[in-house]
Length: 369
Image (cartoon, rainbow, N blue to C red):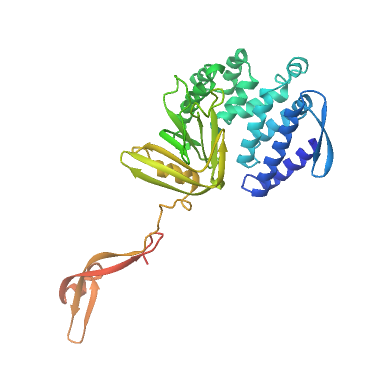
């Protein structure tokens, strides 16, 4: 399986940081298989019948020992397409969540130089979202974070904000930290976060995460990965243990979108290419309501582009341009000339000024023809 991962990694690097449907599907298939092995046997080994072959695999201990560092490095490799990086960071967090205690104690797997290198790179990518922050907080124990934060962040107030993240209030504290850092980026920000009023996946309502410290229901427009993501909770009858869910819709999952105004709200509706399943609900249309004061159309276009905006229609029409012309007359002929082109000599001839209206064709790109 290590060899399989290395061959996949080389293919992902060769493709570079652009979309390739086949290679993205390969990443999903590989990580799904890896997590099946990881979850199936905590210790020892298991056999799987995969693609007409009997394959010998190790369990949780060996998967963690063999893949923690490689998957972490993949998640921060700028040569890899960003959605594959995100797939890697999600699986990296799952491995960290169930890391065997003996690996922490005996091999000090989270305090090694390899782990330190990964954390340093992740600290440089904190603007990519909560999954990176989650990985950093899982790898660094609370008593380590102050020392590490001073190394990772040059600004004291940023380092302090990071150390204030409490594991029991992670989602809320993480949101505050990311909003702080994003707000400092100005026009260079890679994530634009807007508070929304309500969200529906088809007819299923997705609720603001239940947390008394969370003041807004935040939607992240990720410019780097061209995706929209957010945390949410399900209604009580569909929720599991009160856990937060997360959803991420990339540009390749969006067939089209529209932004319309309804009273005091702007409504962003995404028509998806296939059904999305989150927790106990599913749907193929995501509808998000925002305050009308927010420029949601601009944010959506920066993420998904103009082509998928079904409300964007190029106009072809005729506009009227009024120009004052002079009619130059002599004994033999007369000539119509725009007033701006009349020379001093011509102006001394018999002339008459008349307003002249001419049509100008405007093409879909806005250029006159």
